[in-house]
Length: 313
Length: 285
Image (cartoon, rainbow over all chains, first blue to last red; front, side, top):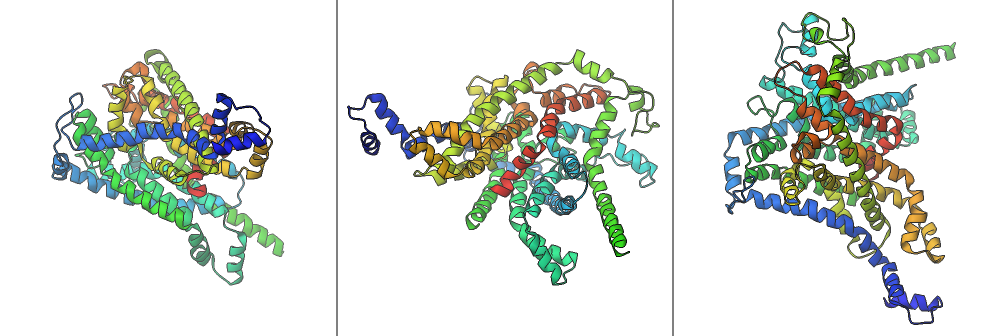
């Protein structure tokens, strides 16, 4: 306030400043203006992210059903789901799904980025086409995959049978346990690969040419150049992409929900689909919230690593 | 001779690159091609195990699209999606511009922790909070209406757009702003008249990306709305087109294709903006 008035006086305001002028001067201070601009965002995030998060914790500690808030039951919900075989299966599924999908996305993503980085004709068109699976609404494109994995009319099986790779009728992709997990992982890789490739490509483009030239002068083969120049310089981008993708693969819902609903016999359930089944379809919000809160340790670990990484940069 | 040989080697290398890319292109595009073919095929051909599934042999038909337009609420779903995406994105953009400028440019106590808070919410997957949010929506009296989604979509739009815009605001030279302030412009005028015009690419990018995020969103739209007339295009097609019998694949694929069109249009015309939005989190952050 004092600063504002002094500024006004020195700027030639003789008369006693009116209320409006004083308000304006107050608003013009850097910190007041800064808090003012951030307030709407903070109110939103507190009301619709922090508060629901608190609610999730409260639900998970009580016997809360849709339409009937229940009593506080301590860690009962957690105890119950931890001794539940379906939940244990879900935990195992989530780690298998995330680890395998992430491995494929990383390796194929780097390879695809290296291919896209070459100076080819139709470069824009190629990149645009590669990115398409990421752009189309996942729930809708997965409907296409659902049809491709149909138990009777699967185009995958039709082709494999004609090529004499398998014998008719071929696997029931979404109805047999190991195949269902494979199908879900394939679709996740299909959808996530463009994100890896395009982001790594952005990282590749920012590597100065001189590094490669220097390696070439030293007689490094293209493989050696990849290991000694490209990969180490890609590390920052890769770290961020992998961490980011870990959260969203671990917390995936759309693919499993549309393809298998967690089946067959719960072998493709992930935390989100199982929480949906228990919390919304089953109406047990308390246990549902407890299940989805198991995503939190993963989120926490990733945020921690990422923040440490950014600070180090 | 040497140049001819090197030209040949170059052409060979290019051919190999295209050859290596081909499987990736096939993998990426085949599902869409197959959906398109399915949506124009007659049921008789679709469910004939002897016919080749890859193309249409007995003539393309538009019955599946006709079914979509006449027997379902497809246009209502599209209208809902448009309203939700436009309103939620615009509102979020205003909030994010203010917050992004504040975090990127102004110095005050706590600014760093606010930035961290926005970053953390940016990383929260929607699947973590959909259960309590469904109850918040009920308490606000918005359940089963498009307003449930207009109110909740900013929870992922605002952190994303704020984060993206912070990067753009940082590229505006400080001197320009300081000149405006010295010339007597208020801080708000400086933001609106000087900084915003220079950050237009970032704002366009955040708007387009936000629109597609809203359009494609699934779990909230599935969870908070159950009345067919209030559904979004993505959920309407996924949930309401699946009937008891098995002969729905044609109209299901037709619906999936048509409901993807708006996202694809945005994408085709603004590819570069889209890519910069996609990589912003990873590269700029």
